[in-house]
Length: 373
Image: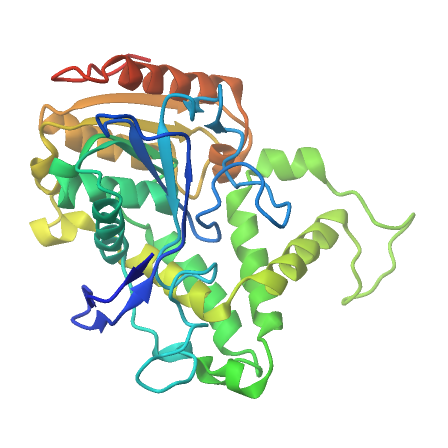
């Protein structure tokens, strides 16, 4: 979907005419009341569920589809790719109309709030005045929260999974190390590597390896790899791959460097860093949620997620309760770390199913009752 009207950005800049790639699943009902927007995390896209023309399965396919917790026989689900990404929406790889060359490092810095404002325009074009729910995990959860605060009249329910009200200093530090790996790659060329016919794959590999470590729990890494060697015995080398965990991380890094854009990685991790809705309210998160007083929320966290720990979700729950906002909270005892929100844990999925069944039961009613899970 193409937009000719410029998009004002939080930085003070604006994005001129731009396009957003999106997918939909299910059927919009006659009342246009069953639409659910799914917001993607760092390296995901608009392809939420099903199989695309290349045979790729959607990143949340275990959650979204016919008969699944977010049942597309009952809901009209929308997945949208955000500006600045590298999966079809206008981003650093596309042409800058002002120069006729790829945007590269000149693409304006975008924030979670900017993405939400762009998504609102897409929803407007689809003729949907109010969403049944906005759903997201991790960075997608931040977008869902921002929807409730910035555009409370445009949704009924906010569902935020494995997310946080802002990044901790440790999380910002991980993002900075990953960014430095990219910008110090000799093939980065200040972000204009497209013009040189090269890709900063070395930096991207390291960035992905760093990120991937933070997505897994210590228990999961120990169970999957432990101290298992690749060979029968140690090779006593400082550069060879000795342990299976090293091999796994290098594989993840190699795969990532083949499909993800370096400038997009810089933009999206910076958007993560900047998200802090309480900042405009003197650090008072409860004050940031005042506009969402008549919304309903579901928060889900996972016990071994040390990147976005349950304590961060509880901060959000407290801020909502301070406003007497209806909120359900589930803390799932799962061993998978941050990646748990993408996996098929029966307890987690039952929470999601019960909540969406509660939403569906209220279609056509003046007020949807929240499911208690």
